[in-house]
Amino acid sequence: MKLIQQIEQYQPANEQEKQDKAFILHCLKYQENIFSRDNPLVHMTASAWVVNEARTRVLMVYHNIYNSWSWMGGHADGEEDLLAAALREVQEESGICQVRPVTEDIYSLEVLTVDGHVKHGKYVSSHLHLNVTYLLEASEEESLHMKPDENSGVAWFDLEEAVEVSSEPWFQKWIYPKLRDKVMKKNGGTIKWPIGHIQKSFKDGNIE
Image (cartoon, rainbow, N blue to C red; front, side, top):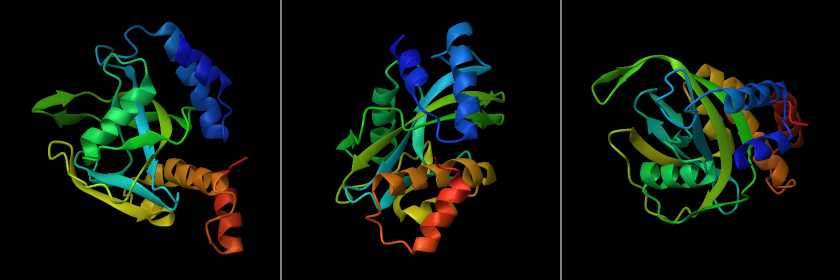
């Protein structure tokens, strides 16, 4: 399976990714129906960290279930090409038409816990999302549109704001700072942050 090879070749950025990479690979090799919600315990998802062309802002949605600003993404639902799934989810959730990968390589890996909730009038039991994140790019000139059954807001945020607007503590600590700092690192210092701020961000995010 191509995805297994891609994940095996992925170099974790920190301890969270190292442990989650091993867990995801184990599930891909030994769990059935891993790309389908027919596996009620654990299944694959794809997420996107969508930046503007200058790589200084991030596009996020206000997620109805989690009551928080968040990245975009969703279930694979049988699609083994998770990059294609991430692109599809961004278009559906934000209304933008033109979104493209900055790179087709995996940007980040996460095992996400999902608490039990009601969706479309049906209770969904707590489970795990085995998540692959991709770095995508879109223009700030694109029109934005909400997807009312999933979100109640779509907006661009500065890299720092993208972390602060989240109301999910685990994402604020482990995920969004990591994704922010990877963008800053890829920019090669083109963002005019104070030097002390950059050093602190890299230290807190454990970026290697």
